[in-house]
Length: 134
Image 1 (tube, rainbow, N blue to C red):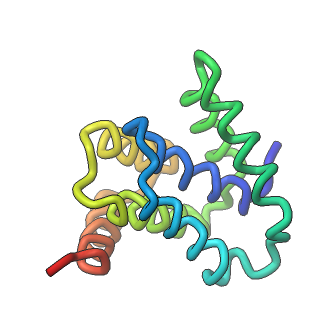
Image 2: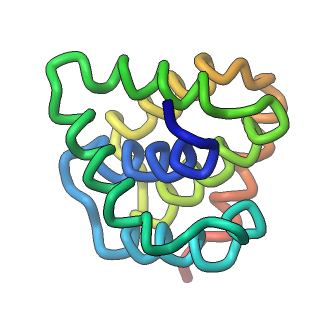
């Protein structure tokens, strides 16, 4: 069992790794999110390396994605579902145009955390707006 903050980190790593290419911009946004968002205010940053290793280990298993989606769903309280999806969308948008694999993972995440379609669309649009380039 993981705590909600670890679940959020797992989600960010899943999204960044979905296309098998973790871009520097994705890693940068993960660090920015952990360092600046209120949901990570009480998170011990010394745990980050361990949480990243645990996540990578789980993803490396044959059924890792399913196991991870189940784990994060269990760990996330209802009040953090929108936060989780917003963070996932920010990581996806930070990497540029999301790949089909990334979009599919976002869809799976939406379904698993039972996020309303209109809420998800608004979150996605906000992420696109925040990460638009000239």
